Length: 381
Ligand code: KG4
Ligand code: ZN
Image (cartoon, rainbow, N blue to C red; front, side, top):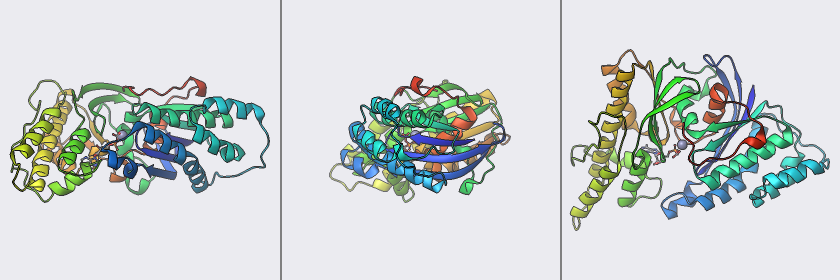
């Protein structure tokens, strides 16, 4: 089954083409193309993602990415333009609110011969509504034009399955033994999800305020680093002393599996304020803050894994790139629950990408009539 996947939930425009085979339990995946166009530089001066800028940029990037990915996948063929007035009329309606995208669509996509794919997958939430809609409408237009089914995918589902992908995208994937527990840590979400089977999820804990990545980004901003600051904080932390400041570990001992990072962020802010006039020990602050986040995430994940007696722990999301988190989780799991398998994502698939969307579509997706699919910014697992 060949799947073309599209991801535009936040500030990365991504398209992947994969060929999947095998059962859900033993899937194999051949990556034919996997492209990401990042908007990070565009949003950096604003200190965060600006939804309407993201929408404009997705519109600009989608068609060139599509052409490149079809080309890489060996599926690119142009045809003599045949006027298909009915299709053109319908596509004009689907892309009514994406004027720039419609222009490019009419110029080049409409002339492509129908590629040999079986379905189109698209992220339909959660995320920024204007950004999501561009991807969803683009996917609908393609599905309509090429008469292909659409598979709507929850973005967080992509992060759940991202650790199944092996190094250099070897075709055979890692296996999940169910029940599994997913720790999803990104810029918008921090969730502990019980995955009882492919496509079956229950959120057992989540953040009550800031997401882990959001806390990293806000602390980075306090220290004068541009958005997204997570990677910079973790780089800086490597040179710092994690015991230099004793920051709170919010909710580390609470009986539930929820998180809270807003108080920790405020503690860092007060600490910086109290240091006014002195040289700010940025590396020590970063290391102490990072340690506090990691301690809470690891402690609660291990406790949940023990209580629910899961067989696999899955780690996913942008913050999963954090080395300290990976090391501490690995060591705690080895020591406290050695019988549980831990699957960590390759660094290349921690951030947003369309490859994980294609994979989620294959193992957990359902084909839908294209016109019934709508973006949902607040979608939950
Ligand atoms: O999953 P993702 O790419 O986008 C969302 O769906 O939100 O996650 C982005 C988040 C940002 O907050 C970024 O600062 C954080 O992941 N991040 C990190 C690291 N790399 C990215 N946080 C901590 N340490 C890192 N190495
Ligand atoms: Zn994400």
